[in-house]
View 1: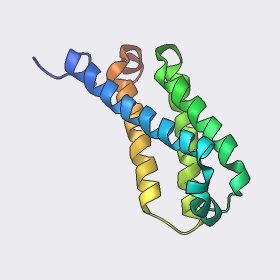
View 2: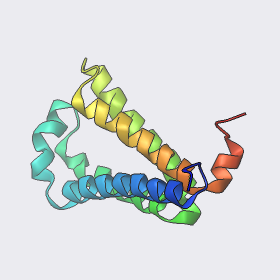
View 3: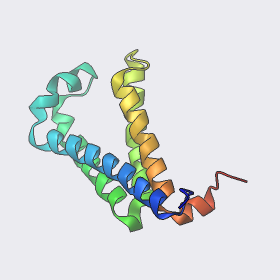
Length: 131
């Protein structure tokens, strides 16, 4: 069996990538909601007051849920991309170019769209990689 996009293997790889993104967002969102003290130092270092931990957690959970639901996955991917872009920009503003948080956000963004691309035939039809 070849592993061209649209095969069962590609779809499962896409689901795996998407699952990793959802797990990462859910974990971070739940920490923000239920244990904001764990991220207090990082929040303060990036210039965010700790009082914004709960709204950020809600946003992360909403993005993860929208991305996990097949009917809203594209909207979720767009929102995840915006959220991760903001995180990358925050670290860039702090002079942390190429920092681990930036690289993780970049990787999660690539996994978000890569996973969606592999598991969604309509997206592959809209954005073909091969001519």
